[in-house]
Structure formats: structure tokens, C-alpha cells
Length: 340
Image 1 (cartoon, rainbow, N blue to C red):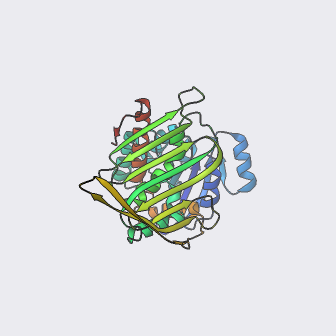
Image 2 (tube, helix red, strand yellow):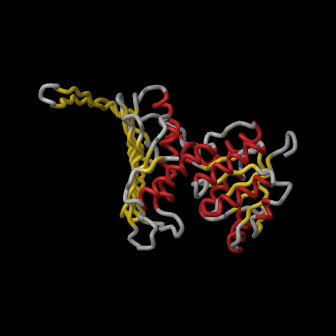
Image 3 (cartoon, rainbow, N blue to C red):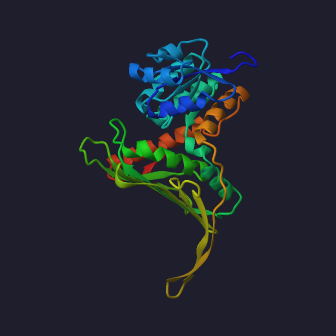
């Protein structure tokens, strides 16, 4: 990238999420989306109809090896992320990886080390961090409105799509794991997870995961591809207030409840006495800007300003660490697994 010039960018993968990435990066200032790679000719034909100024190529290497391209966005299956990102970094490209960042923590750590040594931006696309809802929840936790966080309970279920290469946690949970790690400053220490494959191919389609902390905080995730209804629901409880986050709500996604409880123990009788408090419900105003547009702009500006993006690679690696531990826990019958 020359001084005072725009970032020349290429995207690898023009599937479901790739189409959204192309649409948003095409409009980002300080950026020129010049190339898109996809091995399926019909996808490149679809690209040409909507974006005739973007050059479609069949091979990812045509983007990675092009000296005129400064940055690469990788929106391919997770098993391919590591090799593609490693090639791109070795060719001096800044890299944005679709979630989950890599298949293993070790792969993510190696890519992070490479990027740091070469002075390149490496970023994971955890788009939910850029939503107005998550930003508002972060504000409510940071300014003390919620009080001390006590629990994080997430349900992300729907009917399909069954994935051929990753289980339901790797497919759906990265969204909510990234939100948890962004909102809560405490460091999780271990994972317990259980799951089952009703297709008997070893890929779990229903799974439950608990994230444990040294403190009294606990986080729980419910993920399924076999639900008759689509639910995107998160409860976050603090000792002052509680949050209900419903991502399927068109406008009132976040509700803050002035609800809680106090307890004391009768030392003689060993009884716990609980007093409940139910107050008002507050619906804060949140930004309606498309999160993916903000994410795309953050990637470009992080390169130009040489700063750390919000959805940085270290967070992406932590998400992979949680997923890796969850998979190991499932294979060991729900045994508690320490997070690397």
C-alpha cells in the first residue's frame, strides 16, 4: 500500500457469507475491492452480474500472489483458514478471517506470531461485537449499571443447516462465545460440554456447554440444528440489574430489568432466606447501523492507522480455545477440560 492510497483488497470465497462481505467492503471508504476468488464458475457469474467492476478469479492464489493486493478476506470453510492465511501473511497481506478463526488454538497462535513479526493486521470476523445491542450491553456492564455479572445464559437454536465438517458448537456458538469474552473481563478456566449426533456421523447436532470461572460467574450455551423454532436469546444477570437480549426482535433487542434478589443465611437453622426485588423495565436506544459494515470499516482503518481492531486476533484465538476444549469435553463424556 502506497502512502495516502486506498487499501486494495481481495476476498476469497463467495458463498453465503462471502456475498455479505463483498456487499459491505464494496462501499467502505479508503478501500478498493478489486478481486473475488471462488472455485465455482456459477458463483463468479453471479458476482459479475451484481459487481461488474470486481474481477472474479477461480484460484485463491491469484489473489494471494498478486503484489498489488494489500489485504485478503478469507470466507471459506474453517479447515482451509490456516493454510490460506499463512500463505497470505507470507506474501505480506493483511488478513481478515471469517469465524471461527482456525481449527485449532495452535494454528491461531502461529498466525498471530507471524502477523506480529511482519507488522501485519490479523483479525477475526466476530461481527456481533459491532452490533448496537452488544455495544449497549458492554456499556451497561462497564459503567456498573448491571453490577457484578453473575451469569450468562445463551440459546441459539434453529432447524438446520447441518454442517458436514464441524459440529453445532463450532457452527453456532462462536457468535455468543465472542460476545461473552467481549462483555466479561474475567478469564474462563474450564469447559464442560455434552452433545449428541442424531445422524450418527460423529458430528453433534445438539450440544450444551458450560464455561466455568474462578469467580461465582457461570456461562451456559444451548445450541441446536434440530429445533422447530429459531431462537436467539441471551440472559445476562448482575447483582444490580439483569439484561434480556433477543436478537430476533426488530427494534427492542435489549431490555434491562431492575430485578434482583438478596439473601442471608440463618446460621443456626442453615436456611437461606431470599428477598426478591422487581422494578421497572428499561429499553435503551441502540444503533441500527449494519454491524458488518462497521466490522469491514474497522479492518480497513486498523490497517491504515496501525491499531488493534475491536475483533482482534487474540479474541479470535480465545474463541477457538473454548471450542477446542468443548469438543474434547464432549468426546470425554462431559469431563471438565481446562482452557488452553
